Image (cartoon, rainbow, N blue to C red; front, top):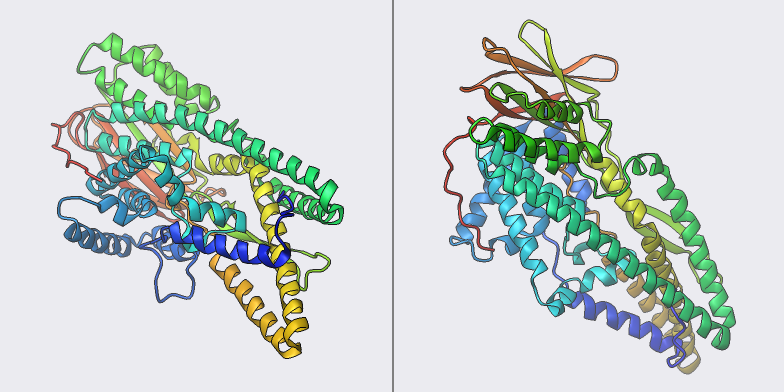
Length: 538
């Protein structure tokens, strides 16, 4: 809760807030997105991304491919030696481009952009603290103001950073490159680090919020009891409303103990080790695969595919003939804007609250199966990880902090309104009614402009899947072609694709399902000769 500033008057408080706004946003970088049409009706990221999402749902990959390739050509021409490429492209654009290229089957470009994203994340982690504060200055003020809008610099949340490396590991597997294991193992290390950072960050924010509230209440008792009481009323109203809104998705959020229980990294590491067991020390590699599958199973004990993988590895069943398929289905939750008003005495108009919240995106796909061309079932896809649950759990865990920040924003808005009213009244008293009316009009217009600049930012990594599925089976020698089919909840077929198995007995396949569309990418022979990977320099 914002403590009373007893050393300055209401007029000075108003101007101080405006000064802080321009100071902090002056340090912020503008958010740039290749998905926002500068001539479009909306600048909200989630709204603008719908066109891309609709193309994926309809299987119109040429539109996405054309857009991505055009952007890629422009950026590569501008940065011939990679210097400044990642910063100029922007974090969110790099993440979206990597996962979108994978969704349309361009594994090479997906890998390249995932490495740029990784490089930029590590660069930011190592930057001096003062530069990090300046870079995040606009984000901080935007959060306190109830938004951030174009003044936000996208910083992927912890579970998104882990998924970036998951995608990179899968790119390597699809290229038949055993470097997939090192990247998958790194994603597990990142997941542990991100969980520790998040828990520490959350505790720090909660402590700061509590200290601020305690200090504000203490000062309010001696200086302005009426103001302190009003602030508590605003805070309680905000807390109740947000708790009600966030509780809508408690059932899904509580399906995972935290946002850092993604078993996909351990699963991919197990896949790599299981395949590796054919070419090197069988017992050692298979034992390593068993350990990774067991770790993944602990994070998702109900997954039948993880149970089966662990069972096969424990029995040391040969992986000479083994097909493993990963499917990305649907889309992760998108950020929409939650609106509500709080009526405050002495304020000419209600305090309008806006903040971004995750909303799930429905998928028509209920289940996916693998069959022979004759219709004999070979395997069914089962869940490995649920990105929707991770996102909603992260949102739930952030609720106390969000409540505190929105309460501060509401108290700030009330102070701005009261300050502007007092200022116009002072002008009227000194210079007359006409001058007072003009001052009031200017201040109201300024406040409206401030609200527009601080509109909530709906940026998020929207091309991530809703859930990650997997299937595995040991094919007979004569099997050359398989069929993958998706169905809705009523058993009606949505999409169907035939895939010819390549040379060798080990196969890794990726599937992207989006409602009635399906894209299948068959990986190269395991293990193919390592390709020279382009040096990435941020």
